[in-house]
Length: 122
Image (cartoon, rainbow, N blue to C red; front, side, top):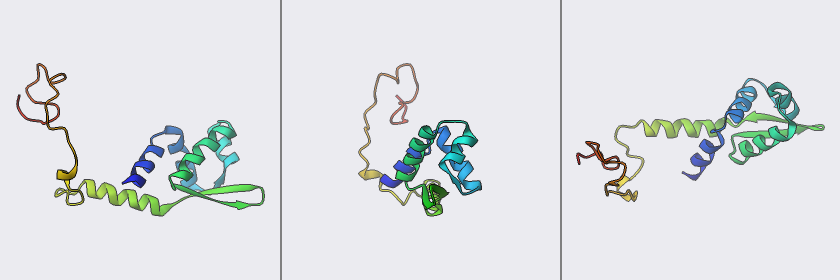
């Protein structure tokens, strides 16, 4: 679960999504990304670090440049996770082991018909 959380956090930034869109269409270096997005090399470097830490992209060096490409295995893991979320049986997780607060908050439920946490009638 930690890996999936890290991936989704890394994907939660618009610039990083744009970088992935560029990398998905061609193998490119940091300077190429910087030129394409019209942002500084240092900004691209920070985004690349986050994407690499989440194992979303990989890089290989040719001469003075590092070229980046998408790690397809990571996206396959994300796709499988999303399929599990869509599973009607939710057999992939034991919901009983999740410590959910079953008490009504009584604060944001005021004036409502259903409890915001339990979904039950108040």
